[in-house]
Length: 154
Image (cartoon, rainbow, N blue to C red; front, side):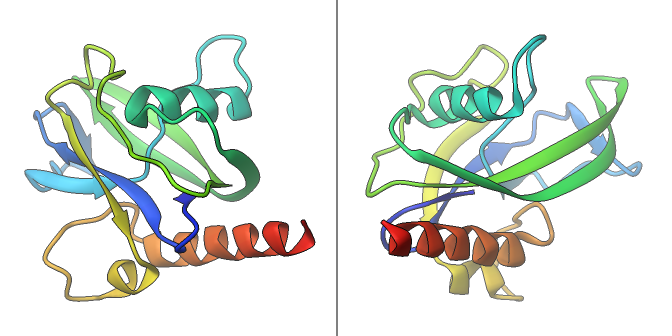
């Protein structure tokens, strides 16, 4: 949950390649998600968060804050059942211009753009875009609060 100085949250738009199924359903053809991904063998959650943010947005310089949420999700990825345990961390920076230059082979063509979202946009019940996870507005509020608390102490 990366927050900028304007309290916006960075999300990535994915184009569904048919590889994911959750509770027997495929997601919308295109949707927005937080940045992140799998933990490699021997890698800490914090190191994975930093690596994934670089791979998916080209961002290296940011403050990694506290974990704000954990979610367990059963899904099928490329015909393989997976029990995912997602750890959401707050992170913040002054500004950044995300890039798609460092995507891995599986992400190219699937992760297609970035966008900074305001909390109001994420809390909007009738927004035309699909955004996951469903608790995104609360997670954004928690990440914004963590950034404000940390920067007010500085």
